[in-house]
Image (cartoon, rainbow, N blue to C red; front, side, top):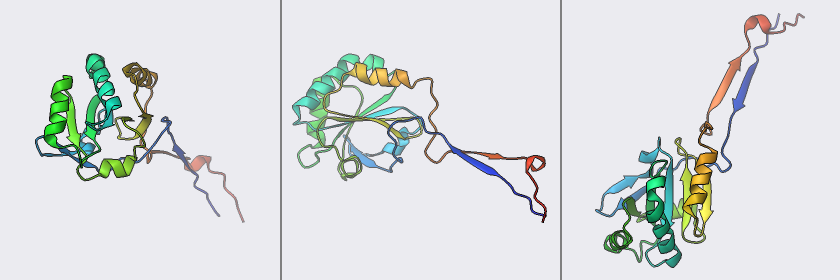
Amino acid sequence: MRARLIIVLSLFLITNVSATPYEITVQGLAGEDIKLSSYKGDVFLLDLMATWCQPCAIQTRDFVQNYKELKDTLTLVSISVSPASDTPSKVNKTKYESGATWTFAIDTYLQVFDEYNPSILPTLLLFDVAGNLIERWEGITNSSTILDRLNSTKDRVTFPLASFLIFITPMWAVRRSYP
């Protein structure tokens, strides 16, 4: 007598861009290490920028003008991916002069640059609460575009890539075959 146990694995993905969260450490402006994994549990936006980048300055001004709306829905972190030219004092000056109030950091160890490989600056990376990359924008992006993307997924549940729902068929429902 053989009995078969049927296991159905289902993988639910609701995001259109997905990447495994990466353990990345950047340097805060006071010299402290900031682990990006600490933002898991929050929707967060990484703004990859440099102080010498004029489009990045325009992006920062847009964020400053719309930060009241943005901060209610996500955590914003601006990261300079140009550690050779951007010192903590230069990045802090850029932050101060723009009137920005969110976290700024420097990709001192080039982990952000190596993992996400921005081809142009600014590059924006939007992560869901599980730490999955759900959207990537390259170049200047209006805050309204970001808010529209957030609103389009607001009521949707995002499962991590490794989430499986396992349904085990009850033994009475297993078709038995006899020799």
